[in-house]
Length: 484
Image (cartoon, rainbow, N blue to C red; front, side, top):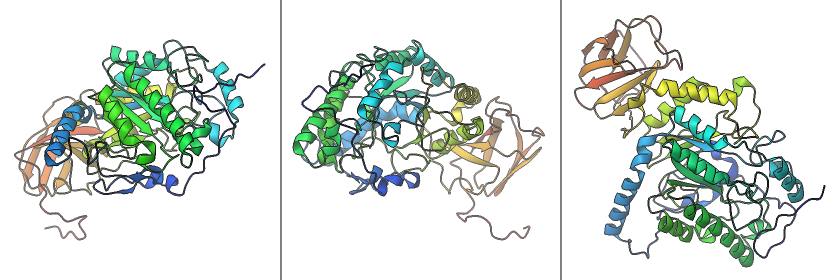
């Protein structure tokens, strides 16, 4: 069968797959995303520089203290829904969702030629209702927004782009999968955004861009053209999630300020992450949950492997409902968000094991919403003892939510709390809990012998304090207890 070479709609030939070398810094994602110091320049995602200034720059009309205050007010307005949403889905799906692959990067790891990879378009046949299945699952799982991966490292675009013929409208399914995804999310009331990988392992200009001005100009025109289409052709877009700017090491080379300014002109209410190497609206710790001193969102896989998208894994490797609920608790406690990787099967069907576990999470969240969604206060050591073995906390003002993961039977003792307690109840049912309180000792009484929750074995108590909860001391784990 004859192989068709899909040309980019600009003056560059299709060459064999360029080899992209990873740096030592690019392997550090498990240790952190490197954007903790937003106030000054530093090394950020994949070892590249992240600057402290916003995309508007020093010379803009909004520069100066008044401009910064105005910009911050606008950011709070745009991000209000996002802070309250807490939980989202990142759909990673494309040509790489193939039985022979382990993840979205296998075009590179398998050292496949461009022509060999292009043959996969003949086998790429997502079912007609795929996007509606994703959106319905996200909704039932308690997620409030969905990020759709529009293009990954392989360069295959899942929308009707004019920038390249290598897309899902001119090949494969002959459908605009981003349009289907956006419409499906809106039908069920979910916010929606686009993920967009800045690298392109299929494009020779990408690997040359760091050193060749001509290649860089062609490649940036391609990238900016793609983003302009995504920001123009699908109505209101709530988020933009660029990723992996490994080909060039500075935001100047990427023309990040110019690109972000274009995005914000086309979508004034949009929220943008920090992966165009500028801080923008929120940080993105990947593969770990680490609170930052700014708005942040942890992006996590359901296997902990760092592999994104669909692949077969043994059942025991997938995160349990209990583990996912604990991820939600961790981000809520730190005032952040959680976006979970979701990799549909090759035909777009949600994998049964993922579907079953996410549906269980959704069931758990019903009745426990108050401890998760909405504006929360970050939990700090001064509020609750960090070494409590049987549970952890989230907080809203004077209300603490104790997520009890290790049930202790008929009574539960909480020590080191200084603030008077007014009421306690089971959050899911509203049933009151009997208790006694004295400074430093709170005892919950008359509890069931076994934990009420059977889904994640995590029962949430709503504890209403007379004021902002405070500990008796700021000491860590007690070294000595003499029974006094």
